[in-house]
Image (spheres, rainbow, N blue to C red):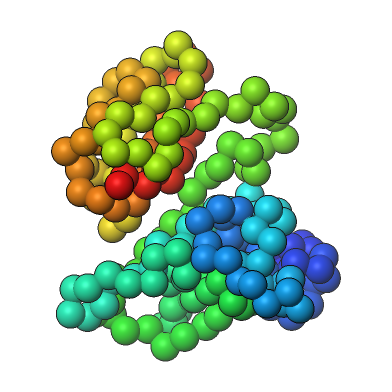
Length: 191
């Protein structure tokens, strides 16, 4: 990605790819105005690469979850993990602790991963929700709902999802249009 100019400033040297692989929503805002190159600052400029890392945090050795909205930790193919943090411009390399739960969350986002015209993009509402969410339009979707640990918690067909029975948390909703097999992915907050 760096060699292809995906650093936040378009350069091809140095590790400044944080903004290009971060989702453009969901991060805790970084209010330091002199740090416009960090993931949590001016989030609308994130995600130029089409990767879509969400700030899902991590699961610690003792089973607790933390860091949601602030960072995400990823496994890598070497003996290190990668950290994408709201207050950094780089994808940080850290020592790996295999007892932690780290995510691999490159989620395709239809707004950024395609050159197609998405001016009539499908929306999901209300978000946040306390019970039922609706995928806009009259199409029928194969829908899967995942918790932030990657566990499938629901599967259904239609365009309405009743989340009333789910715990208060953030979920990933994957909806596949049955007519054209197009896959849409959303992050939904259940209050």
